[in-house]
Amino acid sequence: MVRSLARAVALVAVLLGCRAAPAADPLPRFTEEREAAARHFVKKHCPDLEPLLNELKKANRAAYELQVRETFQVTELLADLQDDPKRYELELKIWKAENKALVLVAKLAAPTGDARKAVEDQLQALAKELVELDVQTLEHRAEVLRTELATARDELTKLRDNIERATKDRFEALLDRARKKKP
Image 1 (cartoon, rainbow, N blue to C red):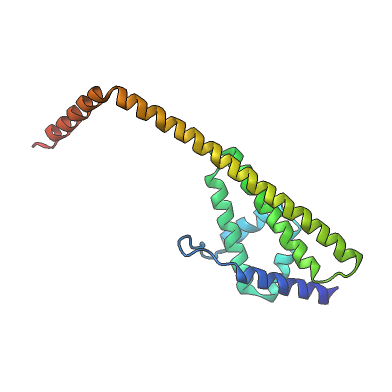
Image 2 (cartoon, rainbow, N blue to C red):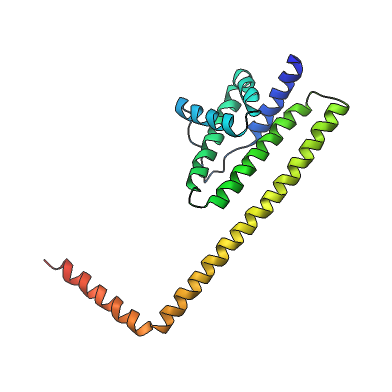
């Protein structure tokens, strides 16, 4: 069991080591506070990942810190989505499913036969769930964009219908600004 866990941890370290943050969106640096926040998030939303994190911390500190930094960044990104509950829920579900898949991939390193087949079946179900969540996320994004487009079209129509009034208001605002700048 210890040997299979060690292989699973090594596999997770390789998987985590291959993931890198995009250059335009660097990960936050590792701190104890961010580690605590990330671990709390994992405990709350994907407790099956905790034992792997514990082993990873012992076996490969760099991969562990990368995972903590990525998880902390997810918590920050999710916090930014609080104004869009539907998207928040979808993104959280995606994170949970991806990390459950990571745990299952680690478990694949050990079992054989029927146990392996059961893990592969779970992994297949998670792959399907992730694709369905991707579809829901894109549907939600399309709806948000449709709403934004309708709003923009309404604003454009109103502006075109009142172009002379809008021009006069803009002209007066510019004059007021010029008057305020004079000593």
